[in-house]
Length: 253
Image (tube, rainbow, N blue to C red; front, side, top):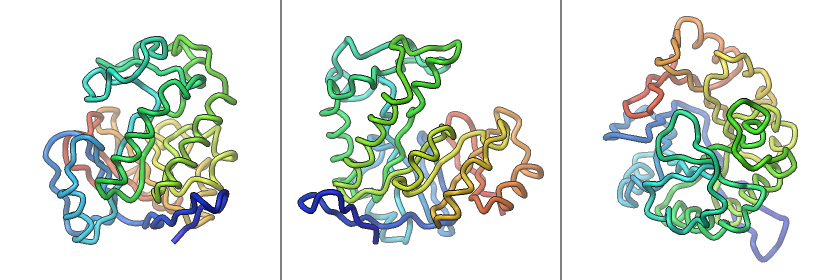
């Protein structure tokens, strides 16, 4: 077990994330094969009974939480103050960037989500959209002029809050933050890293015996014959999936 030691009164233990085949599916009916070691599923769409069944079958469940963008269909959507909801998140209807430079204004919502993740029996959290500062350096800004320091302050808070609840937590993309986060994060989950050439940035996770799950999308032309050997060479768990994550993914051999 890993242990959080920053404050004795909040010390918790969390189960380390295993290194093995990863089933990552955020929509649709989940049919998890017995050979799967880790299951990534949406926090709200999966019941505690399902999580318990996965754990009884020897799977390690990770909950998906969108920590950087507002989603208008969520049950807790009205709990976000209107002035922290920014520009549309390009390509995803109903999503808008959050002003994470003022995350204290919606910290109670994220804290409640982390509580639910723990209470449903998940063992770890996958925090999505921790790259707002990169968006503000691109042609698709958030509307808030978020800085790298803002991002790190928020992510460090997320790490502390997850560990306080006995949850492992992973780095989702954002290769630029690896030097700042690798010692605190427990795993990494990468999207299109082979396509965009940033897999090597996460080799340090493997050197620290922390698993790296790297996903390439069929919608973007993923080629298993090229991608899977590269993932294996890095010591990563390779996965090929659909962009909507609505069907059973394929694991590299």
